[in-house]
Image (cartoon, rainbow, N blue to C red; front, side, top):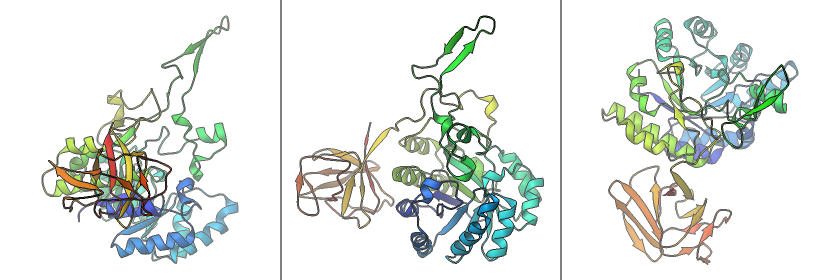
Length: 418
């Protein structure tokens, strides 16, 4: 097997560019129709999606199209037209979840490989064989499957590609087969519009059936996040996963997450993969970097350990928590300026998160860029927009690019520790 693929989320064109800049081998994205992330799908029109595919291919990378929703009969004609439109753009694969759509995609676009979504819940070689016989090239394993079970699938189907999630949100339900959002808000999770009801705080009551007395059960003032799963983080187990020799692609969840999340997770797993092949794998440094992103706490899911032996798979306190760092700005695509994401001030040192580490120290009237130990930093002497306006400080919401002391790699992040 060749080196494992790193597959990152591309919720919009900017995030796609960031994922590729930070080391992804491939990205997955979709137009809103029939994708399980309608919010991110709406970021792409057919025109911009075609441009994104061309951009990705120009970088020598791959783009997989998400068509992983579950359509009703009334939508099948629209689905056919959608597949025809997208297939003409020459993506590298379709990600689909239903057997009927597997056959439909193959009929309309026989030259484009089909990847089976995690929504299909493949757990055994029996199910895998059915989809392999249908012509599926890759199966994205159910999040509930173990590495041992994937090894067994590979024994039976050595040419079938296997993809696993290694990072991101975990669903309270079985690989996303959830009805809570449909029941409470009318938003159908398996058709792309989950309201994330499992993340809400709930008030629980215990009732005495004899006298009707009702007692409130609380874990905090706002109730309890009883269904709130911690986020998946398998960075410290990348070596174990790759040692198995059966996994072809490591996938990061998060098409609706921030640009910083895309950059940090992609860079960190890129480093973990490269370190593994260079025989210098160090789990501690990946965990530290991933903790800089917003998260719900981390756990290692189902792949390498069974969750019933642990008692820390849920976050009962809150639905999201701050990471260890605050993102303050992001460098523009031309590398000449940066856009504020929080607050920027002169004479304050900000750490640089670079998509590539090739940089030289510099200093001029606008500030300085320097290296201390293994990290790069920037300090502004003055905050000046490209139009020449000087600011004493600048806050998020200001859309003016601030001039940098030197050209930096596009999509570099400026951050500070909290």
